[in-house]
Length: 250
Ligand code: NAP
Image 1 (cartoon, rainbow, N blue to C red):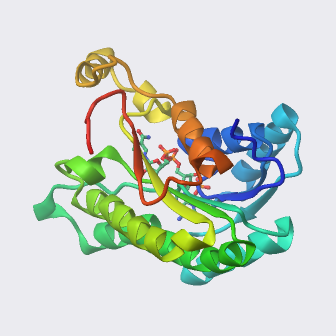
Image 2 (cartoon, rainbow, N blue to C red):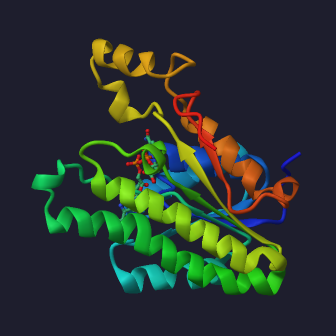
């Protein structure tokens, strides 16, 4: 099940907490990966770790997602180095939180550039080779807050909700071409950042989750591996919520 042998995948934010688990899940299923991020040395050491763990011939491609030219280069560079692009995972994302009345234009713009505009440009670039190949899987990592909203995150929630609407639109455009377009929406996921929270704050967060605990990066990796697989070929325009029951949507 979910065998990705022979598939090639571009994963943005591949060196991050969730991106690295997505990369592990895809590599474990046999995909060859183009690992992307802005920090070259972080990416290189992660690629070496991935190859030690699962083997495979993966590459790293640095890209600053806040720079238009750098983004436009990423899909062609993936096709050049891997020979094709069967899977695109828009995972990279940033937060620049502030209450609405204090939110600066730059905080809005940075989140839109990296979380939404870069994803649009990567999807647009990946659509052509995927259509030609009559196979493609585009998966974008959104967030529970794109559906529920969150105080202090007007910019982030707007970008994540935008990603959902964008994915549904592209899903309809590409549905007859063997290309599916879906989202995975994590709830609270345990990362280095949440590990540092005081126990009382962790307990307060866990109390909001019916499963009583935060999710793990590998929970998101597994959801992406499923949506990237042949078995998910009839699933498109959907959001898979992975949140321990925190919000039961749809
Ligand atoms: P993270 O650990 O902070 O990783 C972010 C990744 O994005 C890093 O690999 C970083 O690479 C990359 N990135 C940031 N700015 C970039 C830029 N300008 N150009 C290129 N790459 C850039 O974040 P995470 O927690 O794993 O989150 C991954 C995704 O899940 C995000 O879309 C986030 O919104 C979503 N999410 C997370 C949670 C959670 O609880 N953690 C919950 C819901 C949704 P470099 O360091 O190399 O720049």
